[in-house]
Length: 53
Figure 1: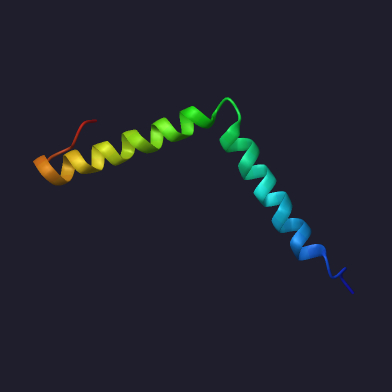
Figure 2 (figure 1 turned 180 degrees about the vertical axis):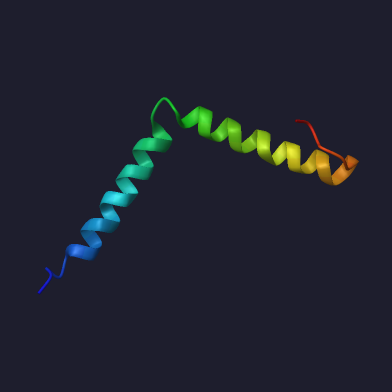
């Protein structure tokens, strides 16, 4: 029988892993790439064609 706290321990581990990934030195890269994708999508919607890239 699994331990009753097992699901919440996994959830905490996942949250910690995501926090470390987003708060590490790669955080600005993740945020910047997300902003670039959004800007490209907006350009595609407004101008048509391939957008910015």
